[in-house]
Amino acid sequence: DADVTQTPRNRITKTGKRIMLECSQTKGHDRMYWYRQDPGLGLQLIYYSFDVKDINKGEISDGYSVSRQAQAKFSLSLESAIPNQTALYFCATSDKNGTGYNEQFFGPGTRLTVL
Amino acid sequence: GNSVTQMEGPVTLSEEAFLTINCTYTATGYPSLFWYVQYPGEGLQLLLKATKADDKGSNKGFEATYRKETTSFHLEKGSVQVSDSAVYFCALTSPTGNQFYFGTGTSLTVIP
Image 1: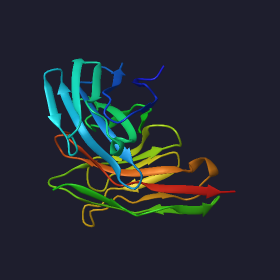
Image 2: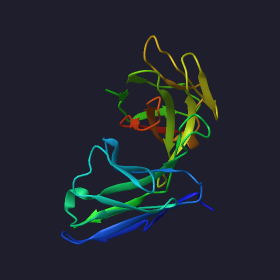
Image 3: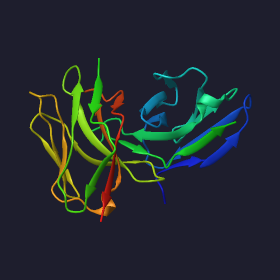
Image 4: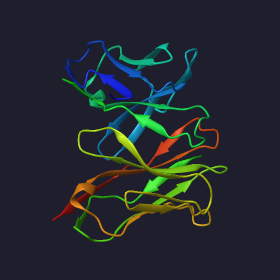
């Protein structure tokens, strides 16, 4: 079973619609992240959370919001989707101190298309 | 600030050729360095890592050495295979591990 899961895997929506992307993890990690990937731009950080009560904006948070419902769940919302939010979205987790390397573990991604 | 610059692709190689993908970084303090690989339709997977100067990370025949004097972490493989076709990302994390910084990715295609 996958350690980091994302739902849905694919979503097509219309401009102005509200949409939520969900992420769950079974790794027991405290830290969770949301990224978007666009061709030629690599990964851009949207939001990150170091525990249930800690939410931080990343470099491109405008137009997005997040909720950390539990240690294992971190959802990303687009309140009013627009076409330039069409992208591949990834959730990731990392351990606080365990390995000492702070590597991130990624979900399989959600491909979002906004028409 | 922190940033990662990696060579632009796409890169196309014949099977068994030698691979180098360049990566340089700018960072405060002593970051940890990573190479991630993304196969088609999948998320990123950690390929290898190094946490201090002169460390060599290695996995699946890939290697990269943390060079503080040149602020580089170039990825190499002596003989690539078709199955190595993927997008490769160089990344760093600050010493506190609070944030990750990714390069733009380099697409590799290996032809038989």
